[in-house]
Image 1 (cartoon, rainbow, N blue to C red):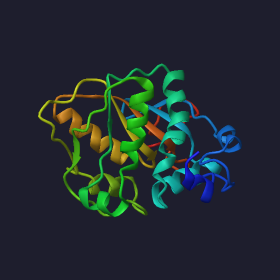
Image 2: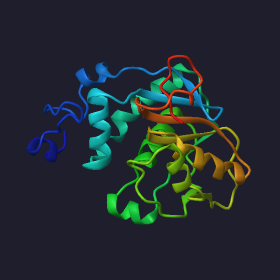
Image 3: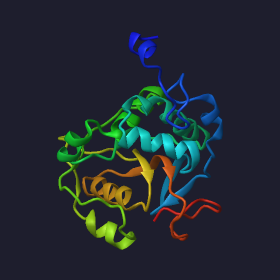
Image 4: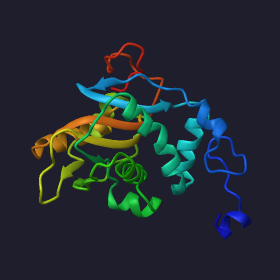
Length: 217
């Protein structure tokens, strides 16, 4: 245990109890989500965006608590394995440099780095956010898509491979994931699966085709 942990014991991102950044009780409370598809691409989530899982994701992203990346990535890793998803490599949804400076870290990149190590697949950083976009909060599906038009580009010298796994924290409407997938396709690659910690629940129903899956248009 680090000296800092002795002075300031870690608190669970889900329930706030002392002792661990993500406690066993909150871990068992994560509600699994059936696999589905978004825009014809497999969508795998670690759990439903509710309860302690939602609290921990918000703490990770907004407090911020970057040390939560590894424990939060584990339910997603298990879902990836359970659903038989085998990405050729991983990429992550990038932040604009201005937003990255404000937050201090890219939450999707840290999740992807953990998954890369535990799944044993390469991590690629060729996807770039080339246009700053206003906050998506409060925008509907169509407005989000307009907001993100042309926001991403593959900028690495080597083009993207086929069947990339694209990592993000939460799929709220799916507009961000779709925009990033278009940028990968324009560079000659493809996204084989969207990999997210959670899928929002109160969304229009038609976007995900698997029965019982939360919509993520």
